[in-house]
Length: 396
Image 1: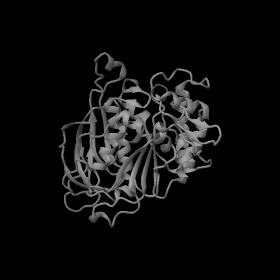
Image 2: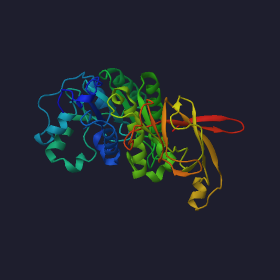
Image 3: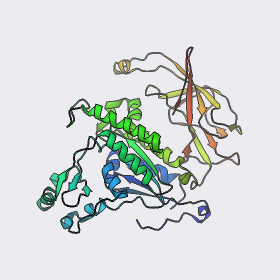
Image 4: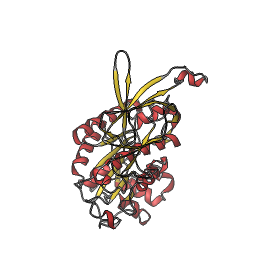
């Protein structure tokens, strides 16, 4: 991709600030899991033609990204065997140029995945593909063995420090969106190289990420929570690869974060937003709307109740395995998580609606009906559960 900004449609040129692309770092991993293509389709569908480009870039580890943005060593001119020229170059060409709206980075290789090598003479870092030993020819493998040493995997605290440094050195108007995919995988009780279980190591990384996010404003997608809601291990194929339904949920969460960025939201052609039937947890698949607190044309403020809903015959993991239902009901109130306007109610009181289906059409401004919202952003809601002894609100 060239250095020049990509020009959107003329009618939106006045709105555009600086962003021209979204970078999916660790592109091969996101593609393998199916998350990357879903994010690309979801984000581009919401934008006017050519307003934004999505780029997949090589280099999975935070160490490589940190090196790209903070070059402290020089790279030898000799380079690798010709067959590795393109891969080698990708380790140093940062796609995070001025005009990048969002950098999407996956963490699942930082502590529990593939290795990073350091050049013995110059000190720069490279990260070969996981399967390089079986796909590279003998000259390429000899070059890596001769000129590089295996870099000891960083601990969770060092990864957190690098993420903070990365976040503070990104170009202006660039937001770092991190998928924490290290906490859910099969074989979590196996020992890691330092003696900890892989699950303990990954959980420390999650804590380091949370700390870095609070300190720097990094946006995070909690893949652990999303996959756990669907049933955890049965939706994890291998490290960084998930079932189709889990990949869809991860992509939707990441896409909504990206579409909510001011630099991206300014490019969106329509004002309409989808109000969807929310999910409370993995036991909830179909909801019943009991009462609407709003009518078409109503303005909505952050914190306003929107509708009451009920989930019936909730499953637990134990009863589900035996095909039994608990018979329990769960009553909640959907609460607006931002301001907007209600244009049209699609589901009447008393109707059953699958989780994720459209229940109403919203907009940011109370003007004319926004029309088709099939590819628009989601109107975010929280859910309040009123029990005798407590009230809680969870964003969904």
